[in-house]
Image (tube, rainbow, N blue to C red; front, side, top):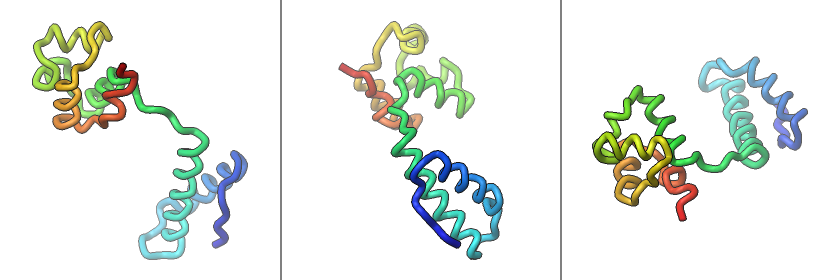
Length: 119
C-alpha cells in the first residue's frame, strides 16, 4: 500500500476508485487499514477544497425535520405556538436565542447552523 497526499481532482478520483475496491474490507486487515487512512485523506481534501459554510437556520431545521420525520407541530416545544413555527419556517421571523438553545438541546442542531446569518 502506497499512500500519498491528495493534491488535485485526479488524485481524488484515483483514491475514490481504490476505495470502491476496498470499502467492504474485513476489519483488522491491511485493506481495512488502507481504507481508514484513505477516508481520512478524502475528508481532509474535501474540507479544504469543497467546504460549505453552515446551513441557513431554516434549512438546518428543515433538514433535521426530514431526518427525524418531524412535522411543524413537533417544533412547538422548541419554537412556540404553531403560528410562530410557521413564521420561522417561512422566514418571516428570526430565531430568538431561547429558540436556538431549545433547538440545539432538543434536536441536536449545531449552534453554528442556527446562528448563521445572525446580526
